[in-house]
Image (cartoon, rainbow, N blue to C red; front, side, top):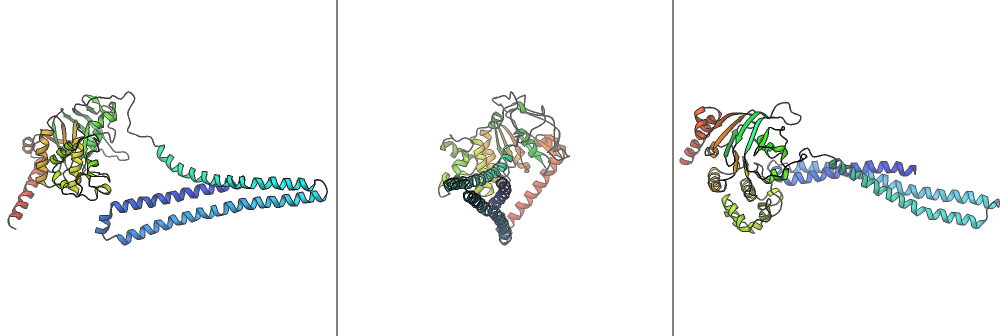
Length: 415
């Protein structure tokens, strides 16, 4: 029993380390496949190969350490069984010689002892399996034991969201950071309003959106939808009503059809085609070998950045949200295509609340109004004309982009 306990602990510890090594290998493989273009572009094939070889060698060493313990375990169990039999023969033999027991008793006792050998080995094998399972389960339990921070509160409401959004003196800081990502932000967006959000990198634009989708929890009472504290609305109800297209669009390694219909699996093909046309991607889809059934590869690796963004937009539209959010979703799309998409979306978005984060002033100039964020604060707000009249950050961005566009047109004209 002592040997089983001691070896069981060693097997548990070493198998857990071996599993951690296997997890590391899996992560490196996934990382390398996802970043294969970058690896080739920076000529890091040899470096990545050496790194992967090192990780594999560490995994091999950990498995060899486990194998050595297991190789000792079963022979030791058999040795103990053999020694036990030898001791019984020696002890019982002396008793037979002294005529304290007869030969039949000794043979019977040895037979009973032999019958115990296989169960002992089976117990050892079971202990080995249990320890391996416990090591794996310990790793799983570390994940399962983590309680979700973002969850429905008691009495959360299932509501039909209309689209009115209100930020009330909202201040927010990410965990572990002292500086505020958003500082005393107040903003009222009536249902059906189109709002542009501009600002430099790190000004809090994306944070504003992430709080709205409850990727992070806003302070209680600081963010309301249709007059209801967002934390009192069921997550399923909230997120079903919001369509988000981030800058880095994630596609699944299935077909274009499945990716576009991801938010609404029951959608008809006719509706998918209409959404694709509105997003200026349908003509490109028809040129693919299998059309809508064309596989997109791992994370959409076979598509360009602009194609992924437009497919993600079509996916969001088919969800039929009450609030549509584009978080710099045209960063990989040329200006002319962006204009065409916005024109196509004009009719679709008539009754939607639309939040549009963009670095291009030309894209937000036709919004009902725009806000400018700087260091987590709303520093400017108004229509395009009103913001130009303020001659602040918005006007400065507009002038710089206008000058850059004029220079580009001039250079194209003299080629």
